[in-house]
Amino acid sequence: MRIGITSVSNVLEEWNSKDVADLRKAISSSGNTPKMIYADSMDVRLGKGRAETYQSSDRASGAKNGRELISVDAVLLRHLGTIRDYEQFTYRLFAIKSFEERGTYVMNPVMNWLFATDKFGALLKLARSGLPIPETVVTEHMFVAYSAVRKFGSAVIKPLRSAMGFGVFKVDDPDVAMHAFSTMTNLNKPMYVQEYLEKKGNGDYRVVVVGGEVVGAEFRRGTTWKSNIAQGAIPKLAKADEELEDISLKTCEVLGLDYAGIDVADTKDGYRILETNPTLSWQGFKKATGINPAKHIVREIIRKAKN
Image 1 (cartoon, rainbow, N blue to C red):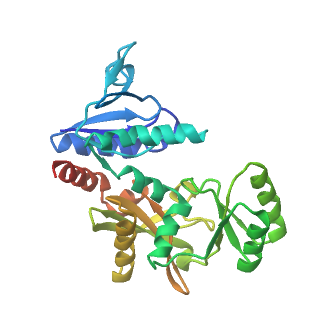
Image 2: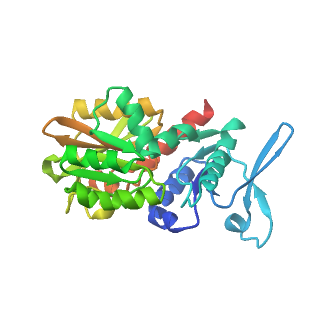
């Protein structure tokens, strides 16, 4: 079986190169063949009853010219790369979707991945399912966002699509926030305003779920108010209690994810789901727990592809 791993030829691949190496090794160790699929190099060729996906052959074979047909039995969706334009984003999204249209299993499924990687989309589904989330306001109106900051007292402003805590900032003064909202309005950016939560232990839990089972958990203690490993947080081995496991499993079920890292804060009012990560990076988790999620992910994608 040939298992494709979507990646990109920019800095995102460098950030996640160890995760990709873990996946390649796990695929090879299972007796299967890893195949890199570069999201920024694909082209899809359509005809009557035909949809074929190609990419530059030099990345895989060393050839200087030409394109190669991407022939795989399953695809592990990791990254679509840096997006600078809406049409570029939808093209890459549907280029990966073209594998599903041909009957190739994609993990995580494309549209489920899309919801889970969008902070608004993910919380929309989780809120409707009754799962515990922070109070959040999403708007294009800066005065609505301003009022939300006034209501929350302290608020966290996040891009809808971001990772590793980049571009996320905390505000305590609505008038200071107004300057940011004015800029975002001029850039046609929606505003995602979330209540700031005091997290017990100044950190949060990341629970890794694969195939409907909890693989393990870490507690990420922040050196600032942020709990991202990329922002300096220290990962420690944690044991998820029954409630935390249940929340994490239900989150994956609601979003239709085969695997994910679920970030959950423990607050004075109980657990709150902060984010879902269908393209999680797990080097901190692996260091803290001794568990390599890649082995579990590869085992699950092989099972799904065979079924």
